[in-house]
Image (cartoon, rainbow, N blue to C red; front, side, top):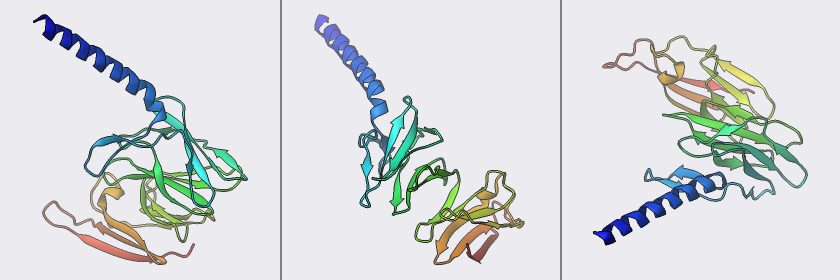
Length: 216
């Protein structure tokens, strides 16, 4: 009996040390879900992520749950204006990079993607898009849901700042227009949108489709 008690106490001490260690090391590590749905540790996110074109980015942790982003290259160094939160899927991860931009992204819920565009220019602030629908990094285009919901979808050229607003009234009776969208993607110089229209019912789809020429 005494042996069992001693083993039990040792186990409790080990678990307490493990919890303390994980709590202290969280700010130096990144975590994400792998393709099997397991929450795993990834590379030390306080170290710079060096990219092939000579640029880099790294996360600067303010506390266990929030961080800013530093990014740049041999000529410039920027620090994000915004503070970002660790989500259930972990911190922002690298989506793509070019000579002009670094693009980070993370999941923010069911069919929701949060994107941050980091311009490789001196003293230029990051661009954040909470509800990203599609990206065309070749032509520097992003399609997203506007927070004010005044338009169905907004397409922006994040290099030039030009914006194209897409309106649509034939939408399903959902709280958010984004809930009506089935598919949205760029195909060459067009945006393809498939969504459910106003006649949608739980037992009867009302599928709509538009192919919109993007000229920004």
